[in-house]
Image (cartoon, rainbow, N blue to C red):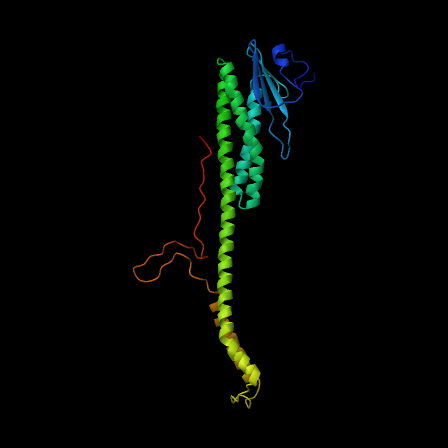
Amino acid sequence: MKSFLPATWDVPREIADRIGAKVGRQRVMSSGGHLLLVLHAPPAPGADSREGRVFWRKPDGSWLSSDLGPGSKALADHLDQFVEIVEDQERFEERASGATAYFSIIGALAPIHRTVRNLHAALAEARKVCPEDRDLIDLRDRAYELERTVEILYHGAKNGLEFTIARRAEEEAVTTRRMAAAAYRLNILAAFFFPLATLSALFGANLLHGLEKEPPPGPFLALAGAGLFLGIVLFIFVTRKPRPPGTVSGRGRHQATHVSADGEPPARRTRYSRRS
C-alpha cells in the first residue's frame, strides 16, 4: 500500500500499518518507544487539501522529519513557519481599515486557526506519550501561545469587520434620514407655493411693479441677486441637519446621547493584547 512516509524510514510495523495513502488529520502514533507525529504544513492560500509533514522520534531520542531535516529543531522550524504567517497577518490587521481588508485577513487566518489548534492538541498528546522529552514540553507551550495568538487575532479581525459593517450601516442610516428630511421640507415648500403658482398661471397675473421703465441691466441684476440670495436661504433650510435622536432641549436638560459633528455617535475600537 502506498504511504506518504519517506521510503528510507524503517518505522515499526505497528505504526506503518496505520498509515494510509493520505495524510488525514494531525495525530500521534507510538509503539515500542517510537513516536510518530503526523502534522500539516502551513496551508497555502485557497488550498483545499493539506500537505502532510511527518516527524519520527526514535527510542534513543533522535528526531527525523520528512522535509525539515534531522533533530528536534525540525519541529521548532515547523512552528516558526506558522509564526511568520501569523506575524504577517498581524501587521495586515493593524493597517486594515475596510471590510475588504478584514475579510481577507479572516479568510487567511481561518485555516491557520484550525491547523494550529490541532497542532497544539497533537503536541500535547505527544508530551503525554514521551513525558521525559523536555523539547516536547517547550514545543507544546509554544504551540499553545501560537494558538492563543491566532485565536485573538482571528476574533479581533472578525470584530473589526463587524464594526466596519455597523459603521457603514449607521452612516447610510444618517444619510437616509437627512435625505428624507430634505425631501419633506421640499414637499412642504411645494405644497405652500403650489396654489399661488397655479392661480398665477391660470389667470396670467402680470402686475405693474415700476421696473419696466428702468434702464437695463439694473432690474435684471437686482432680480438675479435677489433670486440667488433666496436660493441660498432655501438651500440652508432644506439641507440643514435634523436634530439627532435622543437629544433634549431646554435649560437644565442634558443630551441623552452624545453625537459627533457629523450627527453620528462616536465609536471606539477595542485593541487587544496578543501576547500572554
